[in-house]
Length: 163
Image (cartoon, rainbow, N blue to C red; front, side, top):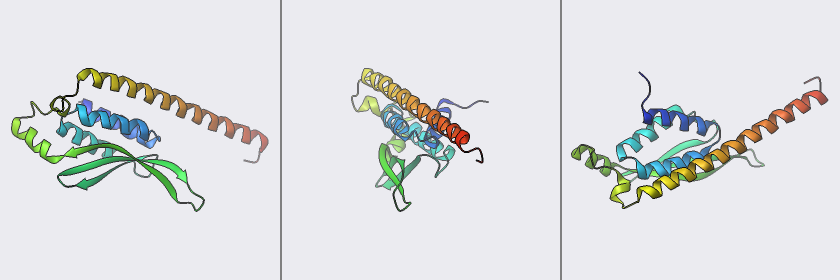
């Protein structure tokens, strides 16, 4: 049997994190924290954390707070002059355990946070389209960067045949 939607999305986001696409993943998680029921969002975060490789590319982090958890993406920016890793923390959402408890007691039917907060579904759709577009721009930029790196290495190999 194949993966369900949440599991497939978590797998793709973990790959994006490992490739350095932390901005895109943080944006997707922010949207999902509003759009998905709390239990599904918690599962998405957990599976993404399981699939991603810590220390490779960007990393998904969580910090416990009273009654829940704050989710962030640690965007790897490189190293400073002393060789220390430089990272930027990007907010990616929150998990409120009391909402999960309420959903389980209600049977999960009415647990969509977006509707309870009065957010218009059209706004979510527009946000998703904008997020998708930003993701494609970042992906294109990363592809070009990878292409330049490959070209630079080929150039180096021709100039220095002993490599």
